Image (tube, rainbow, N blue to C red; front, side, top):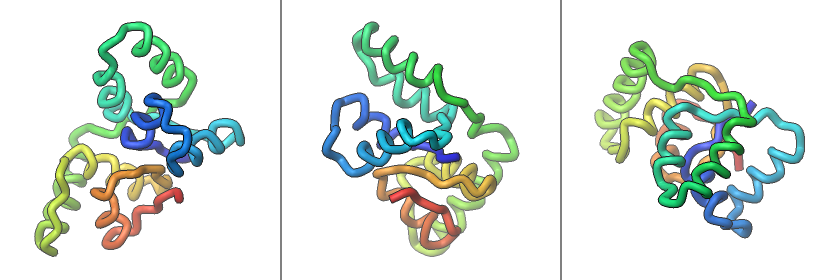
Length: 132
């Protein structure tokens, strides 16, 4: 099971076929690996489609994947803790949603396919497993 971040999905839907993370996603999708969508990731990706036809096409892709809930009270507390620990080490992550995503993956030992440098501190300091 692998969670795919919005940074990869956005490039995927833009047609960035040459990008390494998009190539990895395509391999996962055709290779039978279980790719899961996260509720917050789906929202982030779908909100960027100005054209209904493109929104509908992307939604059909997500409809075919299992979707996990990344948020909730306990997840929020955990993400805040990770975020604060990084800040104490002098590392600032740009978004709280990334802390929720990283916390989910760390807690459930699920690798994350991403192309967002904000996940690198979670890899270094907390053992987040990234798909390369």
